[in-house]
Length: 336
Image (cartoon, rainbow, N blue to C red; front, side, top):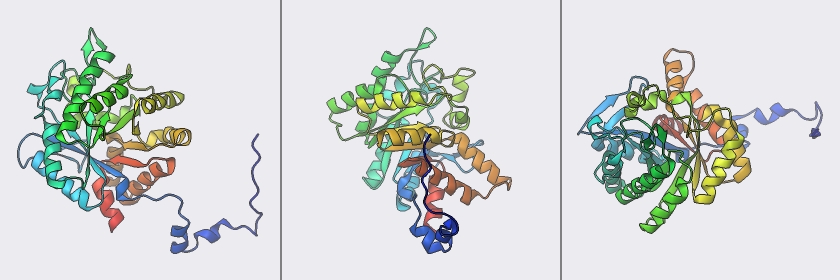
């Protein structure tokens, strides 16, 4: 049994003394959050000057590449560190093997090049590596005889990663959860001359019920149907397993590791922080955004205060960065 340390006895020690004035509370604040800790997920679509509302995510839109560039400019001006691009692939370009992911002129590559040409290094560009936006079955990998084929999928992911790096991605973010893919992607990037491209691994990605609005946003929900991703994404009941997953990815060359979803998994973030002391990203996923947004629209909560508190909680748990659909709005709030 751990002995509880004695720091003083009442009335000599009064904890409220250190909370009396705003300047004192700010001086003693242990955790800080700024726009530099934010990554903004952006959905891109074909066309020019096109924007589409997403019903399950009020306030979030799919944007054509030209508007995505303007949105990235706004994010950079607010101090947001980077944008994470997610393509909405037209149905006619989807296939069983997701070959469109390797096309140098696909949506994610076009958006990456356009943002890079406009902003250079003023903002980071995170590109998602997985096949679900490109497959007719909605899975992150190749489906062979009803099973997701790990090693065959990894071969394609390497080509996809190099394709995105060639377009100007500064961060490659494998979200597929195939075993061994980080090492193979690192090798492929290095051999192609992209040694400086960062790998942010979705290392502890859970088979969560909080992803629904995202799948609607990218158009993969219909493709996946009643299927699930439980054979490659993690069991929400497991915590020790997350440490093993992260250790593997770090050993294979991951520069940043991610926990997804966010708020329901703060314990995982804390365990990883305490165990490894490496950069950790947390993804405040679409379902979390929707809950906050709909609760605020109903008047049940104060949106600004609750959102900023939730983002601070990620930092307190040990996350160095947070992917959030609230990134732009949060950056505005933080700067006001």
